[in-house]
Image (cartoon, rainbow, N blue to C red; front, top):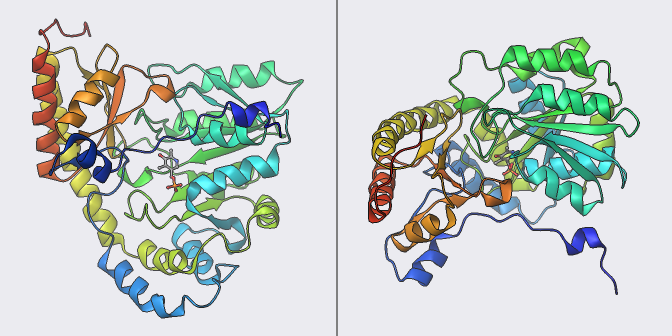
Length: 383
Ligand SMILES: *Cc1c(COP(=O)(O)O)cnc(C)c1O
């Protein structure tokens, strides 16, 4: 049987290396993983308690409508229940969006170095991904606009904007986003998907509240917002994501999704997690302190070594070594530090470092220092 060229050529998503694998491969006891933008500690005790109580109910199928989850999130986000649909992580919602809104041969539009799931999901269903260049490691909405104008003949169905973006950690401000949404009114056949996996970690005061924008009538029919419980809620292992969109679009996605795509435990945990603002608050404090500590250490490293980094609005930092980073990644692994190579995003000189607990951040800095100092020191980047 012949497999289609799209599937034949598909490069699968490469997750961060598991700790156990690095321990085995390098014969190490102590390994730190700062590779997958996960929370550095357990989920909320309220979530764990709710999960334990739900275990005896697992003989039953989950509620296909996710009724309680929908009601709870609707209150939390200030949108109607009809505006909401859930998925097995927001990754599944990305997949569903593309399957619902694009037919083979059509295209989606995003930036270079955008979250890679968009491209992977598109390729599986023979949908082309068009990528515009970044500007200063940020999504360049002007380039995206120009591309949309150019493609009036072969319309783009979905524009994916990760705000803030993974793996760069950079963000678009309110003025940029509202200007773009206004522009999109002249492209009514195209939906704008804003993927907000890291919103709670953002400290920039001009970051837009996309749910406020969604609640404005004039944007509601073209704007789709994605949320996930994987990052600030510390539930990456559970798989729960939410989509906010206009009822007509949500309805089409309901038709296509698997009837039990959100399992019972995910529904129960989601209800408990979204109401626990203390957990979110505390988690953000840990991340912000970690970021500030790391900025300080990276600043002093960058005086001695060719190392640059981007200020981040997320729980990770993109490190730029000014030369191929894969050998550096291997040497970090040998010392028990797992970071994430991002060559697949067109960033072969970079590694992504997730903020961990204070002792993990310190260990990461020590290990980076060791590896960088092994090489003949060269002059730092011209800034
Ligand atoms: C982590 C991440 C997601 C979330 O993925 P899940 O499938 O919900 O775990 C979505 N978008 C971006 C940009 C991310 O970094």
